[in-house]
Image (tube, rainbow over all chains, first blue to last red; front, side, top):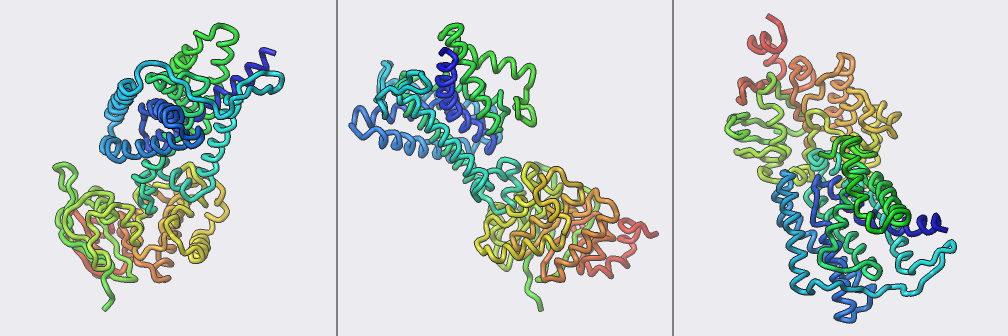
Length: 286
Length: 238
């Protein structure tokens, strides 16, 4: 019974982590940018969904889409007006995106206050799957994660734009010689990744707490997943998301729920010491 | 008189305070192969990179009588100048076929792309049998062929080749030379940078000799081959 619960709850957690980590990995893979505002995009996705649906009575699904659209625009502006100028210096990118992420937390804190919020669920019923009782919304979040990541995978491997993204990731200068506007590729990548984070924020809001600092832990998780999977490797980050999602679920069931937040940190230490390139990385991340 | 396709006037390139190219002027006409020869560090690669928009420069670069200095590299590529860069710069984790397709990624004339792909594979048949292999798994000569093939896939009006013979065995070098001659015969215009002066003279009509960032000599391949300085310093004939 516990095994089945771990199987299903672990899958849900892994799906959300993958939604966050794949975008984070994509930005690094294509643009060589470690974007610490990624957690803020997740948090903003949740708050915009909350504001639209709860405060303005916009239908929930439209609210989630609205959150994604606004975060997409914010991310594109961030890339165009800030990251574009500092892209080549990793340390500048890290400090700037960290500062912006803290800034976003403060803005949200000023507007909404420190209280936890809740977003209603798209599916409020509970369902039973393999004998395990689970909130419908959790199951929905798993389905959405899988669908979104599969779509992204198809876009990258099957379309012209995907080919241009892969070329940009492997050699931006050579990609320009093919006529590819690499600056636009960086911008699109940032937009797509941010949109995925906002989607995650919008759908978890009914079963996880929505609070200004909610983006901080996920960024550490995305980081650990991407380090474990190999910086820039999308396939690696999907597998690492599964590993960490399940590891956390197992720890929650067998040890204590309070110990789960240690899992990603321990993974970061172990990976960097014993396999700095990650499972699928071709070179050291740092 | 054939029209000039590329005209470079007083091109100057600095890397920080170091002067790499110092007031170079040259011209490429439609349908001809022009070679720039010279020793390592003479500024040959910088010259091509400046035309391609990868390295900032001052002076004037005219492509079909329109100034292209200051345009981004991707814009210059879309106008019809294709650079096969130093070190080949293939996409290592993509297949041979994907690399070739990327050469044509901005094109809308899909029918012509298909025939151009067939032509490229006819020119370099080995690429056909390697189509599904990762670019990084190719030998040096095959990689060079793929790089030239990829540069041709954009159907450029001007093809620029940076040291296509670099690091290749004699046999492979000759096969690459033959292919370049084939491209010219088919009506292509080529600006070639080559350290191997003998090879450059075999396949080009006009030669510029670049030394220390300046044009020291220019002339037809025959004139250059007869020049005592070129003979001694670049052809190894005393």
